[in-house]
Image 1 (tube, rainbow, N blue to C red):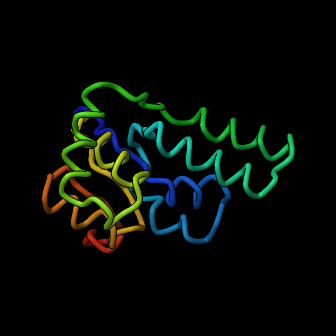
Image 2 (cartoon, rainbow, N blue to C red):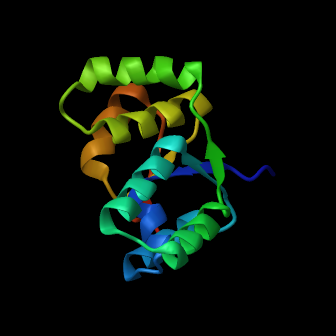
Length: 139
């Protein structure tokens, strides 16, 4: 049986990388899966680090955390999907989330997120799939 890949949203990546208590409900979803990040998530986490003024030790830790994931670069197909998402949701959500949704669409991957408020409407329209502890019978 093939292991299903999963696109990890910025919030869940941050919970896991920073070893926050919020990561615990997501661990059963992540275990045994091939984990990917959108280039948009990588940009968001580096933006957060720059804004917070992280020094070299924390930036090295971040780079180590990122190496645990497959990073999906931007492509023309992702840009096409982004255009579809943005045309439907223009100013309703931030563009980072739209790029993550577009990455999920282009790669046919479900997104694991704690940000259901943004991703549920996009998923309802485009059907890329979502995973969250509240969706699991055992979660």
